[in-house]
Image 1 (cartoon, rainbow, N blue to C red):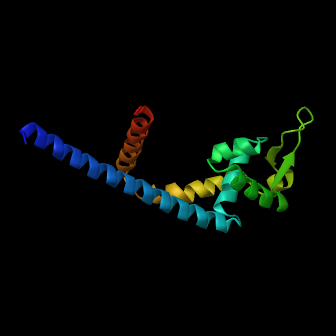
Image 2 (image 1 turned 90 degrees about the horizontal axis):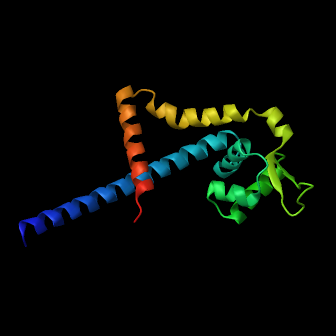
Image 3 (image 1 turned 90 degrees about the vertical axis):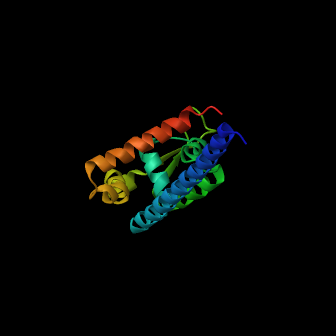
Length: 161
């Protein structure tokens, strides 16, 4: 094998190991976030998926089930089941617009809004999830993490292969 071929082979091997390490780190981050989200949701009396629906509907009220499914990247049947449970609990309301009787718009119920500050719920979630993790870190270290995540996000967005 030529020197150039050896270097190329080592570089491919290194890239493969690095890609595997990145994949493992992303999986671990997802797992940790999911576990923390579950704990926070449970403290609020909801499942993580239910809390996700509440947050989505708070930010985008009067959307359809299909739109909500797309936003959450879950199947329509999964979101429908979550919405059904939240409707029975009085958290979500279904509204049929007069101008289009074939659609159903979903929103947070007025009663739930009166009794719960969704902004505070979300702030607690974010605070518990991210802020607590970085609060004792050096600012420069947090900036490095942010920089790395931005670069990685851009790399994935720009990858056309």
